[in-house]
Amino acid sequence: MKLLGVLCAICGCCLSAAALDREAFTFTRYDLEVRIEPEQQRLGVRGKVTLRNDSEAAQANATLQISSTLNWSSIRLEGKPIEFISQTYTSDVDHTGALTEAIIAYRLGRNWPVVYCSAWNWQCGVVSDCNRGGKLVTGE
Image (cartoon, rainbow, N blue to C red):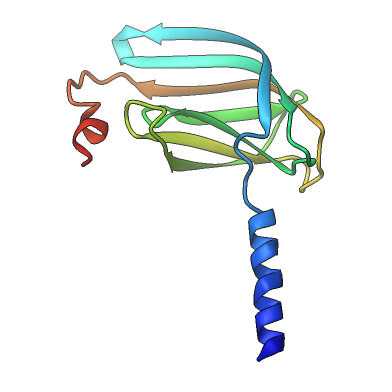
């Protein structure tokens, strides 16, 4: 029974160590290009950002977040397309109460001290909705 307790403690430490550190990186530079297409009710943004790891530890993952009304369409690192996982992340930072988060793992988990994320873009349909903030205001 004592062995089981030790194993549980070790597993718990490993799980917390594997959690994403969403505050590890700071944007040190960004260059954004916005394109509005009224005929298609679409907004497209392309840009280049430079991130700096400000945490004590090297990071195997970086997260990029945009409004939940937008979707990530591509991300490139060092000029090459990179795979990413896109998911919804609950947050009161955005008026919708959620963010669309892209999680990128750099080269099969290799850690990096500095991230250069060149050219990402996202797009969404622009919808006229007066009740966007309802989730935050009413707690729905």
